[in-house]
Image 1 (cartoon, rainbow, N blue to C red):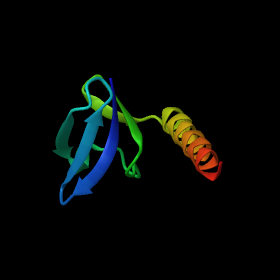
Image 2 (image 1 turned 90 degrees about the vertical axis):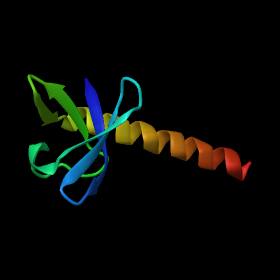
Image 3 (image 1 turned 135 degrees about the vertical axis):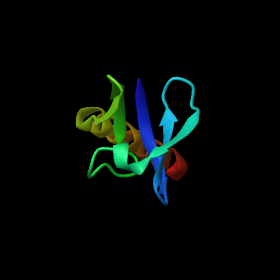
Image 4 (image 1 turned 120 degrees about the vertical axis):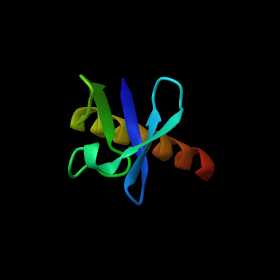
Length: 75
């Protein structure tokens, strides 16, 4: 299962589930060190693992969608 880091609040990280879009708060200490807002985490064997490939893929897809939308506005 995949989660994206929505934001950090005090000692918690707010994660958004890919499965149903629900949010959950987890202790910031169990988030991989260096993971930032927008990072994609994989939940396996009871732990969150940073997935750099999925994070990069999603950022690129978002960039491309944004680029397409800005082109449509100029027309």
